[in-house]
Length: 419
Image (tube, rainbow, N blue to C red):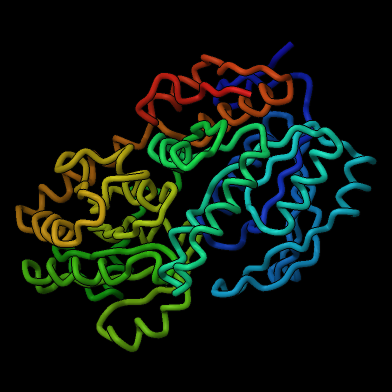
C-alpha cells in the first residue's frame, strides 16, 4: 500500500537505505551542496533511510546535523583554491565495516575525490549498486588555474570513475550529449528544481536598494556566485559597463565569496560587494535587483539562473545549461550564443535601452517560466531512478514526475537508460 506526500507524490511503503557520498554539504555555499540537500530531504520525506558520508568541515564544530538523515563524518584535507572546503580521505576499511554491518541498498556518489573512489571500490567489492552524478566540469577549470596540461588526465579520471557506476546523472540534455561524445556510458538526465516560495519578486526590499544607492526607478545589476576566475567575472564587468553607457545610475552588486573577492574590491571600489548570502537574505538580494548577469561558461547547470528568474529578474546568460532550458531570447530574458562576449555586452545594453516596463515584463515572464518546476518533481524522478537501479529495471517510469522532468529538459525520453 502506498501513501502520498504533501505534493501528491506516491510514498512507497517499503523504505530503502541510501548512502550518499559527497565532499560538500550545507552550510557550505555552492550549487552542489544545495542540490544534494534538497534531494536528500525529499527522499527522507518519501521514506528513504538516508546516510551521508562526507569529510568533517570546520563548520561541523558549530553545526549539529539533526533530523532523519544520519551523517557519518570522515577525516579530510583542504581543497587547494577552495577556502573552507575539504576533500575526504579514502576510508576503505571503515566503509567496509560500516556497510557490512548496515548494508545500504544503493550508494550514490556525488563527488569524484579520494573518498568517492574508495566508496566506489568498496561498493563494487560488496556488490552494492552504485549511481553517480556529474556536478562540476573540473576539466574546464584547468585553464583558469593555469594547469591546462592536466585537462586530459582530469577527463580520463572522471570518465573512468563514472563508467564504473550503473548510471551517471546530469542536469540537462546538452551535458548528456557532451559526456556521451567523450565516452561516458549510461548517462541520464535529472533536472534541477527551484524554490519558488523562497525566491520571489515579493521579497523586493527598497530599504536594501537604498543601501545600494538605488532609487526605485534606477537599475540594480546583480551577480551571484563564487568570486573566482572560472565564473568569467571579467565578462560580467564588461557587460555592466555596457549597461552604464545607457543607464549611468546603474549599480553593480556582487553576492558571493571566493579567491578573487579581495582583488575585485581593490579594482572596483565603486561596486557593491555583499559577501556570501543564504536563505531568506539571499532571496531578498535577488528580488531587490533588476538585471542578473551570468557570464560563466563552466557550468553543468547554474542554479543561480533559475533562482534569479524565480525572483523576477531579467537574466543575461550564455545559451547552454539552465539558460538553454529556460530562457527564450527577448521573451523572458536574453540568451546569448556561447562564448560570444561582444554579443553578451550588446544583449545587456539592449536589455536596459527600452522602457523600464519592458524590463519588468521580462522578469515577470521569467517568473512564470520557472514556477512549475518545484523540487518535489525532481525528487520524485530521482527516487524512481534509484529504485529502478536497485531492482535492475532498465526502462524509465512514465509517471507524472518523470514526464514533468522530461518536459523541463525538452525531451520525452530523457530518463531512458540502459544497464
